[in-house]
Every structure is written in structure tokens, then in C-alpha cells.
Image (tube, rainbow, N blue to C red; front, top):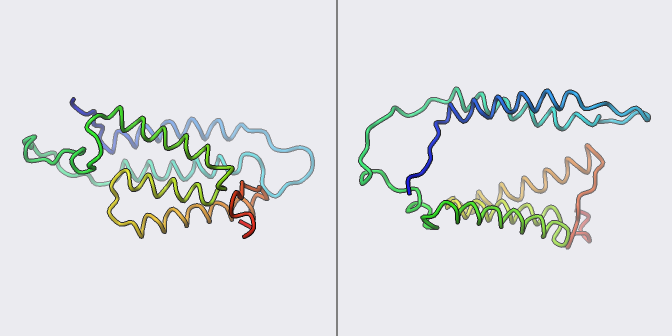
Length: 167
């Protein structure tokens, strides 16, 4: 089966266009009118859209490798690198099943533990070869997001089994 490939610039342009539409929609979110709140309802969507727009521009501007004619035998197969499966449909199914497992584990395990495990498992699936970095990113992302929601937005995320620790 031949795989479908898109250049970084094309992908960045498509993501950028979708992000602009997202930002326009986020800008139209009405502000709270029932008193003063520290963060308005459109702050998070606008911040997320701004970050995504910057990343899409960086993806478009990223220097690419020159196009080189290669033999199929000379280029390693993506599936051989991952050592997972040769069927891309199975890969998509596994990632969707992982997302479903993450959603199911969110309340019983808690946001921090479920998110850290999901990020680490996804990095493992894509054969990221530095497990310490994957663990640090997963734990840092989970704890950082938990603290941001709790401290900045006053939103409590599920604590799960870590409730006695106050997370």
C-alpha cells in the first residue's frame, strides 16, 4: 500500500488557514455579562489559536530537505522504523483506541496520571527512543496543565487516585 505524503509547507498552510477560521470564530465568543471574572470565555480559545497560528507559520517557513530521487530500497520504510504494523488503518485504530482509553481513564485515574500515561504511551507507539524525555514531557505537560487550570482559571480537573495529594 502506498502511503499518502504531504509536505511540511502544505500542511502548515492548511493548518494556518483552519486556524484563522478558528480564531475568527473564537473572537465572536461573547464575553460574560454577569459580573467580573478574571478570564473571559474567549481567552483560552484565542490563546490556543495564537499558538497554533505561530506554529503553522514556523512549519511553513521551516527549511525543507531538497527533493532527492531515492530508490524504495534505499529509503527505510516508516513501518520498519516503528516496528508496529504495516497497515495504516491499524495505526489509526490504535491511536483512536488510545484516545478512548484516555477518556475512560480520566475520572478514575485523574487528569495528571491519565494525561502523563497517554503522552508516554503515544511517544512509545511512535518509537520515541528517549523514554526519560517522554516521561518528563508527559509528567510536565500533565502537571503544568493541571496547575494552569487550577491556579489561573479556577477550574478543577479530575483528581482520581491522586486526590489525597491535592492534585
